[in-house]
Length: 100
Image (cartoon, rainbow, N blue to C red; front, side):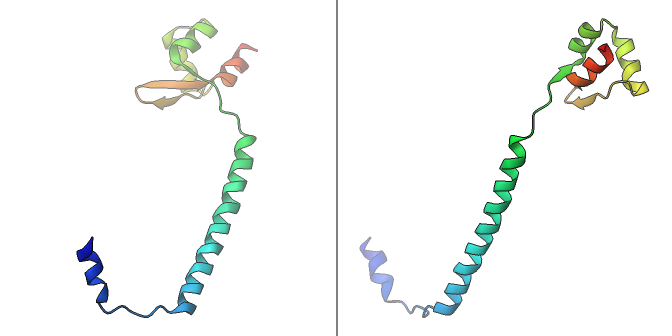
């Protein structure tokens, strides 16, 4: 600790107050912009509901169909499955629409 204090006699550059003030003002402005964006994001997030997803097995059980028929539904565009990892996931609302 004493060694650190002994080196404090090194030549230091004078602080440019105007430059420092401009930097702080710019940072404050950028922070306020970020705050506005985050508030908008949080507002949109409140109105967003995460869709319930089903895997192929659950879809086949609900629709009482075979794996081959599920593949045909996906190929024909009746169901839009998204590959996640090594399996397809389906939106429950789309499956419910097929039941209706």
